[in-house]
Image 1 (cartoon, rainbow, N blue to C red):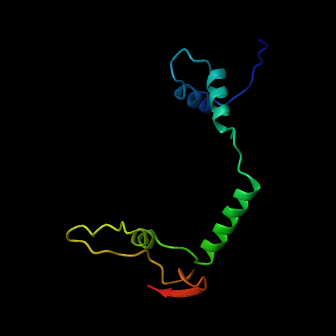
Image 2: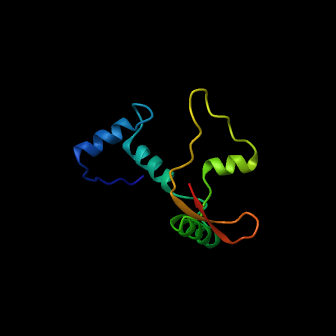
Length: 109
């Protein structure tokens, strides 16, 4: 196996030392493990990326449901704990698609 020397700062060496799984693990093994962990074997498809972009756009426009609304819609909303009151997310006004008509409605909270 061919090897080479690299220069790293002492703080980087110390960090790599702390990341060793056992005291005899080489820095090469640590670096290889870290590099392997950063490679995504299943990158996102163009369709998935487009869906994410659409979702982010809708969120920025205020088109979303709160966690509480989803729980209520699914019929699994928890009762508030004794001595507390149920509160919704702090959203003053949000446009969201109507569950029935598909049109946007303004929801003042």
